[in-house]
Image 1 (cartoon, rainbow, N blue to C red):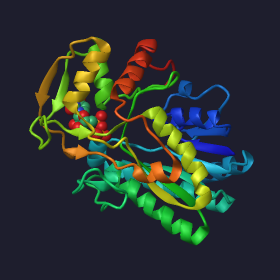
Image 2 (spheres, helix red, strand yellow):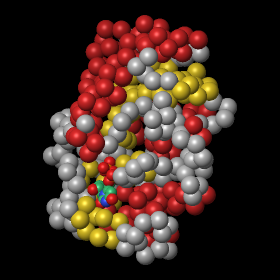
Image 3 (cartoon, rainbow, N blue to C red):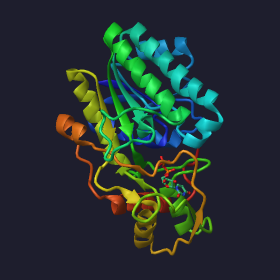
Image 4 (cartoon, rainbow, N blue to C red):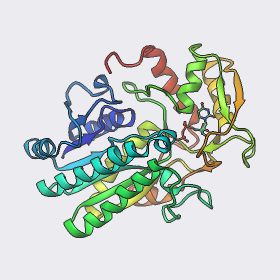
Length: 327
Ligand code: UDP
């Protein structure tokens, strides 16, 4: 199939592009490069620098490239920022997303894989989290992702749009070509590795008084390549109809302190730590049940792969000490 990947120059998007190509699909990327990197897009893939809020252009791209399905990943994704600037998230995630759906329906492209988030669950009552858990987002990031998920269901009923919503837990790691570079960086693993590389003096642990075994927050880290592969499976799965899947490794997850210990083993660096205040909006534990996607699509993430995840991120960082050459 010929797939349009929105946000395909971003961290996860660029790895999804690699996996789609490996599965034999043709890919076109649309990205406004507000956060993505042109160099992250493989040279054989056309990168269209455009914004999703250009409906005429969007329809033209869908028609002229004879797009058959869309993987929609272009979005803002910082919880803290979304609380400070909800308008940015309502515009870039919800309004732009609805514009994409409208263009797809108008042109007759009726298959979509949507990158959603564990943030739709808010503070869940039970772990591991199943897809049937209540969705009560506690910030505009989760809220706007959930709004688009809900729109997908209504567009499905009215217009025959088939969709898979993939609720990501903590994507981390790198492929051989593509790694994580954000500016500013807020994610734990790249920050830890920056300290290991001697680029910053210490990691601040955001709170060690949570009700978890060592007092630090527990998260479900998924290798970005495993995550990307799920998109290829989800595309195939659309033949059977629309669905929502968690994407996490399950199990017990890893605390911030466990991430630090594994990073010390992988890098051989001391990685000094300071304990700081809790970060607003951080639930104590977020761990997925990924039974549904395992059973329905045969997706199997590498369990307990934190060392491999950190090792891949570390290798990429050392091979790309300055990140990507171009924005
Ligand atoms: N975290 C931390 N120090 C940092 C960055 C993150 O202690 O400098 C913690 C954060 O509170 C959370 C976990 O690490 O419990 C993962 O945070 P990240 O921002 O990587 O992903 P999130 O879970 O927010 O999507």
